Amino acid sequence: MSTPYPFTDRTAIVTGAASGIGAALARGLAARGCRLALADINMEGLEAVAASLDLEPGRVSLHSLDVSDRDAINAFPDAVRAAHGGAALLFNNAGVALGGRFDEVSERDFDWLLSINFWGVVRMTRAFLPMLTASGDAHITNISSLFGLIAPAGQVAYSSSKFAVRGFSDSLRHELRGGPVGITTVHPGGIATSIARNARVPAGAPAADEAAGKANIDKFLVMPPDEAAATILKGVERRLPRVIVGRDAHFAAIIERLFPAHYWNIIGRRTKTEAK
Image (tube, rainbow, N blue to C red; front, side):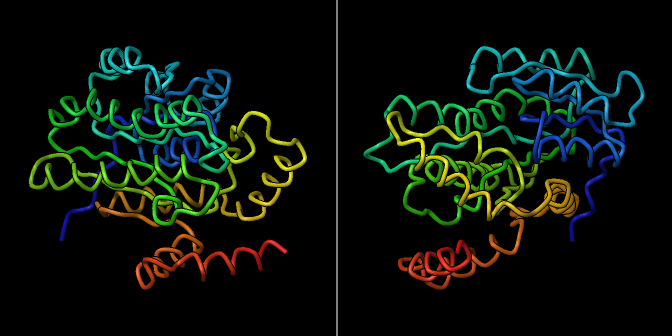
């Protein structure tokens, strides 16, 4: 049995840390004694998160970072090294949403989503893997999604990105087995964040349909981010390869496993019933 991961005095990098699960992870990691390198494109949000943490000066650094920017990611390790000397934990959490059927979503929007949700994870991992390896006992946590377990209609782009994160993480975990870097893939269900409300929609989509769709999704976003973060950090502490967050995600994972070709016949009916 693996020894629990020791968080105290480890430096943790968290992307998408200005709100939602990222902000909750920052709070949970601070409570566990970590130093923090928090990154987001929303510096005002990052400053608010940092102000809420009970940390001594020098234990948290804030970084403006667009994870779709290859050059910015490549420069980020030097900034973390300058602020903290190194890092042992990486939480690839930053993500965006894009609704719409495949024939409605433009190639440009599809590329935009992949550049953040998938390539951001790959490039952050590549940029920081040498630093993490040098720490001697490191861990990478990649946030996939419930839609990295199941793939509903209208979520082709988002599901593609989250299945890609799952495949990347699983394969890399097998490559790194026996070494100093572990990997956890996280599949959150309906977490009460703003990702759905801020989702991009296809150009020309009727405003009424957009509002109704987002309102419908909001009904399923019920778990508080701090509860989700606690589940994630408990999984990292136990060095679990996969963490499923929420009853909805657990249910979907079981049904997909039992009925891999027909799971949506069951999940879709349940979703329509609960949405009423």
